Image 1 (cartoon, rainbow, N blue to C red):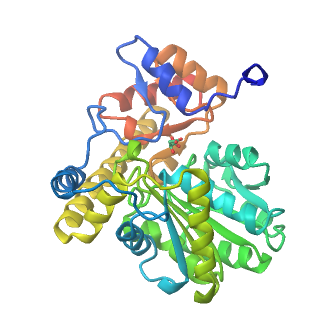
Image 2 (tube, rainbow, N blue to C red):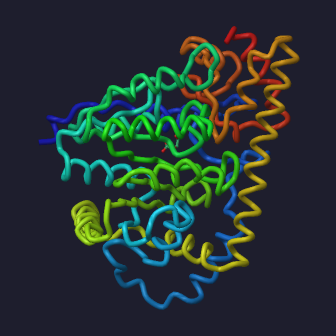
Length: 394
Ligand code: LMR
């Protein structure tokens, strides 16, 4: 049997981490996988997470199975964090999932059950695993324009023109905030037009929100997702806790499925539970309990928000320093977009050959499409990166 297996394509993001670790050069710079790092290159356990884990270990007296949907405290708290009452709670079904990836996978499986021939519209570019999972499930994908290679900002006109061609019943995958990989995001006014266009098409939105709190703030980053949820009769939302709680390996995420009326929520919830059962029975629990505890304890929540805000402001500072340094070196405002982008990433617009040259000559590791993780930078490496970008001719 196993002799029939074929080599699978290596994940472009994760294989970069392996290559980085194997590089013996001491001055190497890792701008690859989307993981937050402090100025020393360390990914810390957040203070509130440490405290919640301490309390959990002390108080938990059983490891018996939780519900198929996951811990209800977590689900309620996350629905609140993401939606803040944008839709009636009775319309929202939810399951805990293994991270944001699990939520996307379950969302696509749900679509497959409900509308097997629906096309999934995905921004070009998008997080590569979106297309990979869609293909793996044998579903149909169609790209919509998103990024303007010239300005390195949003190609809003192209995006709207493409979304106008979406067919009724198709699904449009939208990044709720902090677009991955580009860092370019619609304004509130542009979101209103996107919503109007997708709604006019009769399509269903699937929002992927994996970086809430990394852009303009927790509520600001959820504003578009809330507007989408409020505007559509039906909507799917995949949210990740990996980044904003820094609990990557705990695999903590949620899929919300919003029905047009509360009377349909029961069957939607039952289907989500069924999908959890088919794929892994019960979702991982530890990270979900930690998140649930933090969000429902005012002191822990305040401390978590304060630390997340430090992280967010730190990344904004790095964006500005890098844009300033490139302004100084190029004597132009060509790279100012880096300061305008939001979230963990910016796509700087270098060609694959230029990205490769930066890796070979300067030990700078960014994804082949020139996506860089801003959190991988610090005061020492910003001048090195800026010089390498200029030298590579990006
Ligand atoms: C990323 O885009 O780097 C992260 O979302 C990590 C991943 O799973 O790819």
